[in-house]
Length: 266
Image (cartoon, rainbow, N blue to C red; front, top):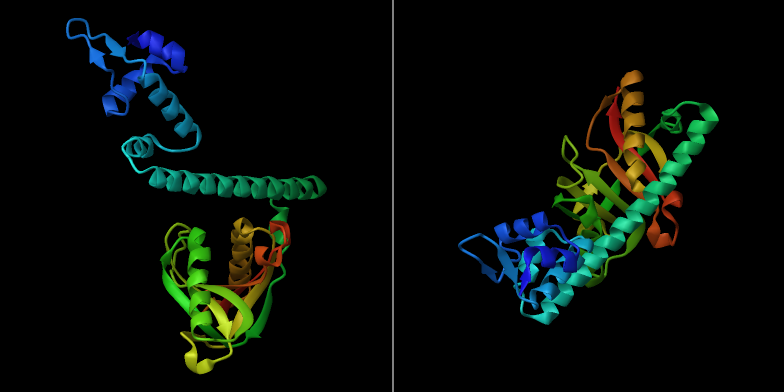
């Protein structure tokens, strides 16, 4: 058997960590001496400890790992590992986008000497926005779930043999926006008015174009709201976005184009 010190050295973890894993029931020693409290581990527990360390590197929480160690079905384990790999790949994409976004910000900052100059890059236009005839899906959702729910809309479109018109959009119904959980209505434009889930009426709107990753959309929203308040308009409905160029066009994030609409009145 291994003492806790030997287990620590072999597995490359601290004694404090092993104490913590014992306390939470993640990896309990095979034997604890009642007289002196010394902990002893079986050689077979080395493999378990090394697996725990690997799963931590993969981004699983200790709670996740504790649950994974009880799963007996190898297919279920494989499914959860694939899900975590997908999450890591998404994180890498977000990090890559953020690095590029920061690069553009630095270039603008160096050019102007103003760290907030990028906020002046939006031209606000007031125009009559046309009616939108839509197949939609509305519920509380996170922005990360857009792909799933757009998929449901397109399944319905295929099932009912509807004709799309090229419009893809999202309407934000909450007064306050929470990217993790908001009342959002995703829409795809269709030609069959009688089959529409929702018809968005035409309205006078303050609009702007955002070019780049969606992480930069709050800058565009801030620019529109500041313009509305400074020019004597009042907001008169829920804002929405129309996605003009996206990753579906096989474009990198810096070339995505989104038009933002705020219904307004004088």
